[in-house]
Length: 323
Image (cartoon, rainbow, N blue to C red; front, top):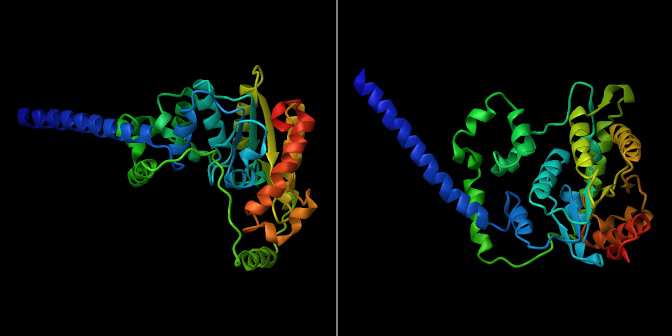
């Protein structure tokens, strides 16, 4: 029995020491990364001594559609592909904690993040992608702990936050060695196959013939929670918060229209501007030559959209950034 206890104690000490050593090495690699969406681009932005005047946040559509250099101020596009309002709320909470919120924050909203089938809802597990800040940021720690009962026990091992991320962490570290300063934007070049890809996506949507009744949908409680969190962050702030939804090649679905109406009403009640460019608000962008697929414009489309966005922002804010 005594040998068993000694073995268990030795094993425990070994695990703790290995966890400490591995975590320390990976922490150092993480902190040096300046590229990639597993923390690198966020590190790069946080590393600026003086934050940008304008910050763009959102999904890949914000990343591909808004060109920071088109504004008359220092702008940065901190958008991340595939992430929605929970992740954006987490990013903003980190920036607030680090005192890196700029004077103007432009947040993109995906309409399909706020309306779901009556038996479904938005998943906020994407916050795990910010788990480097677990234990360092109260909001992220609290929300991750709510994802499952076992979350708080997993993070007893400090190296757990790198679970499944080591290959991308090392790859981004290697890319950082050839790093060049940038504004976060990366446009999509036009491709000859784009037109046929778009038509195929249109045909697939038509073939589904899916047009459910409004009664089959609900506004996402999870989406509302994170939207509220972002709104509350700016209530007593000197910074200006503006939400927008960028163009899409297709018309909104029934659920997306329900989301759009909810967002317009909710944000109007909060006295927060919302610029909606869905449902062909910009006629010129109906042309296929501006699109990579039905969700993403190419760089030529971004060059059409960003000046229009800038002009609309100028009408909202009397700021030299939009003059």
